[in-house]
Image 1 (cartoon, helix red, strand yellow):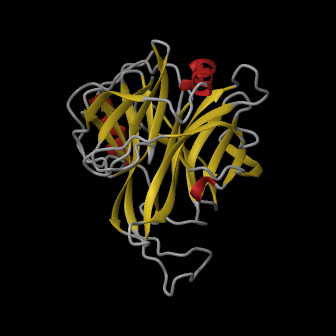
Image 2: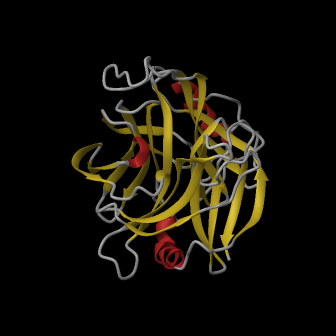
Length: 333
């Protein structure tokens, strides 16, 4: 049982140089709630009922009273949330001419600051912690919460470049490095049944698996993603659903597509989607499009997602827009 007031958290953060901005003068919530996996069987059963025709109802819209920067992952922990996000201070630039690769990648590193931001159910910031290497590794990816810790990868903001994976205390937001990898990792889940981490690379085209051991980890395999429906942005571990051999995760994401406009010119658009995915094989158990949009006309599954069962209904928590953003809460009808 832990109850930490924010003043008790500031001292170690300041000592480590991790605090980016002053946090609100109010206590951080105590006693983290169980993770999505605690209700994973019901979540998987509800997800199995979804179809393309499912009606989604926006049951709550909470304006975030802080700069959300570019959101990546969200974790609901009891009565508060943690958002992983990247503040870009210098955008990456594609090498020229198009198609040029230098040192295995197609763009400059850019510059930025990685953040973990805790906020309450009213959208008030509780704490803002910096999480990057103060050089090229500044892009936090998705978040997974296992009931004891948050897991997040912080990568360079370009493909085929390294990442640091952290285990983060969900209350103090103090981070401990778990492993380093030469691969850009975005989405991540902790498979608690097998004590393994599963990390998704740029575009979630390949999943890498590490066996946790003590304070380190050993790479045990890589699996090509057989689905080309959407690129997974943020995932939540659900444990082993009833009737399935392997554990599963729920992922949200987008696919950048194009269609002919009125004059025949190709017009880009984003397809949003949700998927229930076998953690070991990466094969989708079920996947459906998600056709709800934000005030900025972004697909709502573009970035951060968490999931819960409330009164028997599947509930999603989404943060999609950059900067001036909202926590969008949808329920499946």
